[in-house]
Image 1: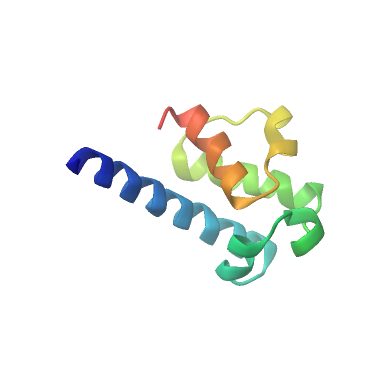
Image 2: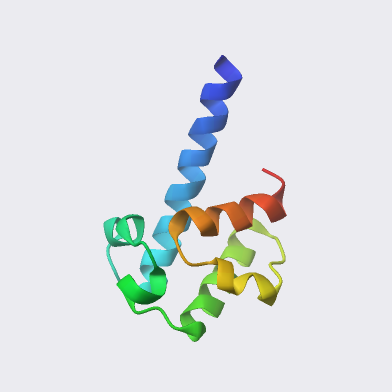
Length: 89
């Protein structure tokens, strides 16, 4: 049980980190990133901002995210899942 609580805590912390990075890049409040059903539709994110998000995530987590993954970076949860897959979380 303890390990599960820790793992879910790690997930929540990582999602919060990704949320804050995205909020900074998109120039919105973190709550707007959480609520967005689509970064493009709800936050007016374009392809340049998506590439910036990818770049910042690579730096933060010392990973390489293939540019082919950019279309998946559409919501906070989807972005976390991409980073988690590549990071092996």
